[in-house]
Image 1: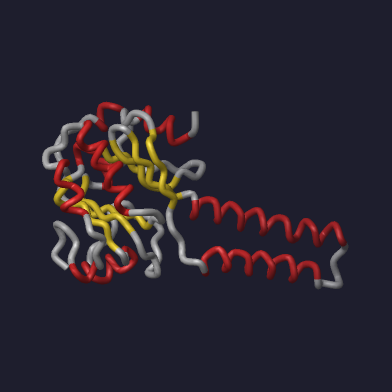
Image 2: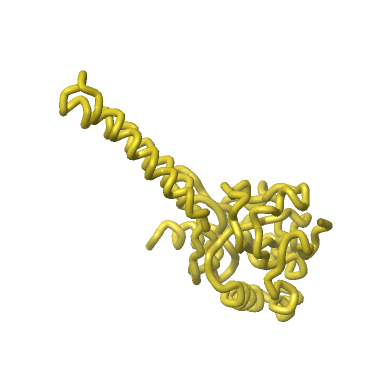
Length: 217
């Protein structure tokens, strides 16, 4: 059983159905490659260091760089049978748990420029995820407050009713129609009011500047 499945089971969200990984701009992995090359080059070209010292000198910062990469990039949105896990799955970190019953269907929107959400709306992400202004496609939804989504255990995940309209956003790659279809199936299974209208509410994909459901832009 993977970590996502274990967390979903602990939170009472059932079995994971589909995982979406955080989308990053193309320059982001290139930046880490450049930093790795600089580290290796700086140690390899130093004439005052022996081979062993050079190897050790390059290995330590490369390991640290690898850990930083892991923590930043292991960010996922996992659609489960009873809700969503959203956030970092890196060691010592845990994602937020959002039951479908705490999501307001009329506050769900697929957007083409999710990275512009804070600047356009003046509001921050409830998920506190690591987003880039260059992020394009994304899902925005109104859900519970972050503190409530951080609560642990099945009892906390069984709380019914939506939150105070906290914005949750996730930059992803994939077809928005597929994402909304899976989201709708989960919400219908949990008998969320107005879930049958979700495709009409969340689609077609729109620009943040043109408005986000439940948010005054």
